Image 1 (cartoon, helix red, strand yellow):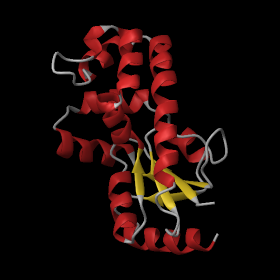
Image 2 (tube, one colour; image 1 turned 30 degrees about the vertical axis):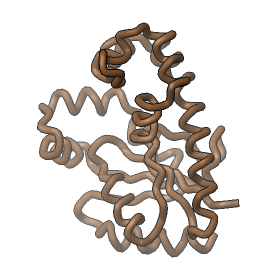
Image 3 (tube, one colour; image 1 turned 45 degrees about the horizontal axis):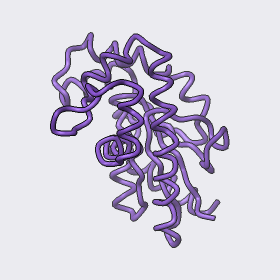
Length: 196
């Protein structure tokens, strides 16, 4: 059975950078968030389920997932968000299982997602990597990348799970704080995970 390692981190932590380094080392990466977006746009059964839950406005007239409108509907409605996740998450899981089958010879696989539970807690992960960075540095990175205001970024961070909660699920932590070289940490993990 192929080893699957979950990798997560808060907005601006640098998990995409870490994934890029693993990818250069030949590790296949499943990006759950972008796959979910693709499925919501292209999977006809999933589109129909989302429209049944949220109405026709969930998609634009050209058939694209209306992300901004959906976000406005579920942002302050935890029950509706839960129902949406109940529709989307099983389809992403099914998609990821098919993806895993494509890489029987890789040393291990990485599953990148913003939301994650501990390895084995209702998922198929052997271990979980958390990419960690100080909040002020995360805010600075997101401001440079997305041109958002500091308050917008702080609001996003407030909606995500806390660093303390995220670190509780970590089997490995990569410190992306500009003090500890990321490349060294990734190379060390690449070797360590390859041996488990």
